[in-house]
Amino acid sequence: MTPLAISPPRSTPEPDISSIPQDAATVPNSDTPQALTVCIYVNKQANLGPYLDRKKVQQLPEHFGPERPSAALQQAVQACIDCAFQQKVVFSLIRQGYGGEMVSVSASFEGKQHLQSLLVVNSIGYVLRFLKKLCRSLLCDNLFSNQPFQQHSAATESPDGYEKRRMEAGRLFDHLGLKM
Image (cartoon, rainbow, N blue to C red):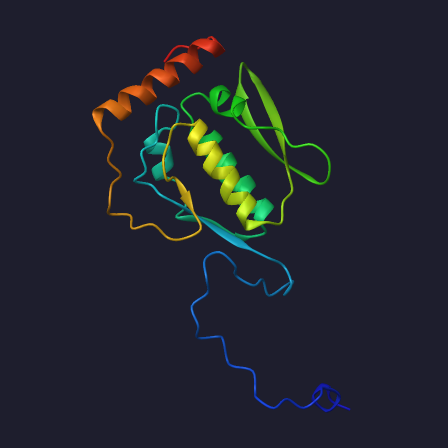
């Protein structure tokens, strides 16, 4: 007996979705059809603030994913660490997760490899909120999104806004005992 004979008849056939563009926020994974995935886009024209090196950010892929939310989060956070002028500063801004399944990010400073654990998450909203808070801590705007960026539109900031952010960064560097 074929699977079609076992299946109950349907009044309307299922639409062919192969030609429909996939939404950037949720793309079904063919290996696990029930798995939620996310694609995190990188805005290479973002105002990166004082912590991230624009040359390194330019070398990042256009997006991370589509992946499970926790894998996309790990890749984006690791990219921030890898693009830092000083990994210690960025690493210190990441909150450690506790309990449950974890994924790790790493940084090299003071001659050692340091690990930080992030809680495995299955929520796209959590990933986006986490990255938004991280970017706020890094004093950079609009670095990540679940939608593609228009790469030709550069982010602009007033001189007063830049100066305020630079002073905030200086206080953090002083607190960590680092020089800008």
